[in-house]
Length: 260
Image (tube, rainbow, N blue to C red; front, side, top):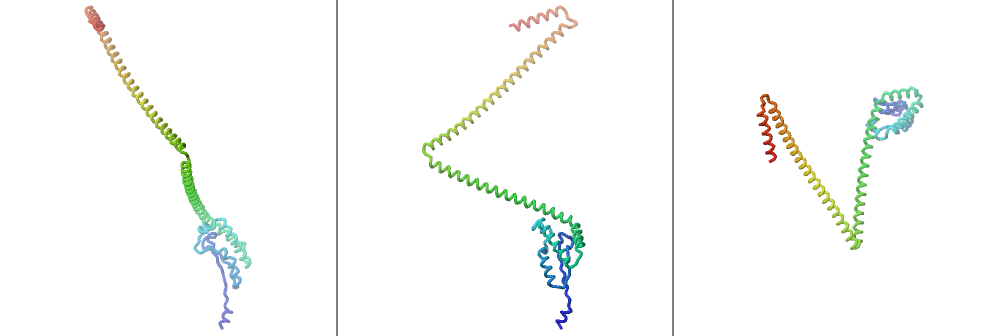
């Protein structure tokens, strides 16, 4: 009885595959249904290489494979899918047109994901270059440190191997160098002192010249006032001959007192 039931039971197999990155929405593509288990297994063997991992989105696929490999994988899958559908008599032209329409609808989203991927790639490349620069800098520091150690070691060996006379010459040269440096410092100090003294003398001479000029201006002002007073006295309306003679006598007395 069980065998008879199995003979009357009809099982139909239908496969689906999701390509949300390219088609958007649920991204489901249905394969032709069949009752032949061997045919189903054959379709699965063809489709499985293009199946993704559940929970992995387009950004993860871009980061893992890159845009070129992702595009090549999609084209291979599209060709395989249309080939399977054609073997079952489906209208592949209409199906390919529908796939292209859905790809155009999801193109802006893929472009945004591509921009994010480019920014992440540039940031990762910048970090990689920075790490390489740091490693190179540290390597150069290690090499410089090693070279300095070798130089010090070689100098110590050369100093040990040199004779007593050479050591004396080296010490004399070092002392002469220090003496020249001290002499140069002393000359600089003396030059600064001379310049300072010259500036002080120039400042003092300028002050004396200023005082002399003020005294000359004061004498000129007094002479001018004396001439003005004399002119006013000589041009009075009530001036008489006695006044003129008195003025002359006063001038002679002033002149005599100045001569004395």
